[in-house]
Length: 193
Ligand code: HQG
Image (tube, rainbow, N blue to C red; front, side, top):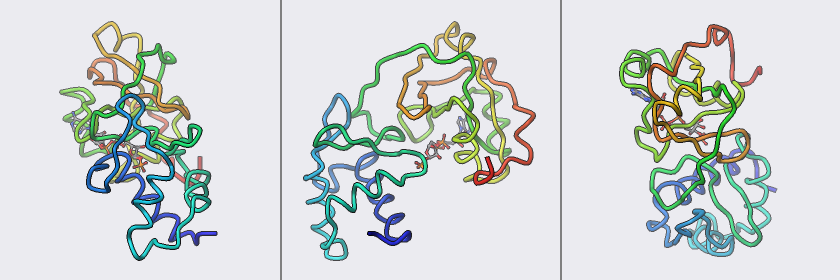
């Protein structure tokens, strides 16, 4: 068993490798689903002396305990479900629920209300079916704001949505006119949903 601190550090390492810079870790991701063999990920991890003792079971523990279900096993392969900055993963467009949520912060709000939601450093804008995930995402950078996205309006304006699993949706962008501030966000806390 990994200790909680080890689990967190290994999870961060895995998200970096699977979402952002796989090449830096000697990994090649499948161009369709962004996965790699779990054995390759393990080899990349154990090539570092501090992680030389890690086993597949430790990786399974990280996947199982991830609060946001960041990773997904598919047979012998593993991938990050969402969060990618590279474009080595293709999702199929789908029709989302009528309302999705995006968690952000007060500082970003004026610019979002002007330009809409943009992917910024990632491949897609991240949205969720409920407010729990949005609360966790938005609470990372200051005062929480939760935006409600009218997805039919956004689709009519040209936005495309993709399902990443675990109630997480992705969009190439969301027009400002499809967003409204969720007035119930005040008082929400990521650990008390
Ligand atoms: C904001 C983490 C100014 C956007 C999280 C966000 C999530 C704008 C930031 C997942 C903007 C981008 C994704 C605009 C959007 N002007 N700011 N026009 N449009 N923004 O981290 O959604 O723990 O790339 O509101 O919890 O915060 O890593 O996206 O504040 O689940 O698994 O620009 O990543 O999960 O920030 O987070 P990010 P995000 P993990």
